[in-house]
Length: 123
Image (cartoon, rainbow, N blue to C red):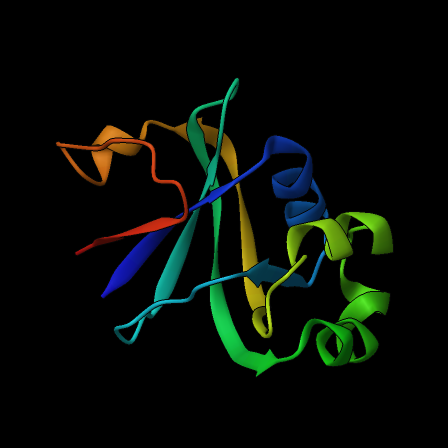
């Protein structure tokens, strides 16, 4: 199983450049995922690359920040706003990141594509 993960364009760029090695989420995949396609949200609205999952950490926001901040690609202020009021969160460690030479339409991966708030599964 693969997934399409919606990411703001500025963070998609940081992932593809290698600056951002952790992707933070309030929820994660419920099924095993082999490959994750990076969907750069509006205004790009295209799949710009892909990655494999090295591992996923689940912990309190404070612990996640302490473990991952040096490779997070985000500010502490952004991180704290994102997880405000949440007792725990997830940090997805990326590996084998591939930047596509040209973005592709998400409809090539899923005919009934609708931009996900978080992620959607694809075959």
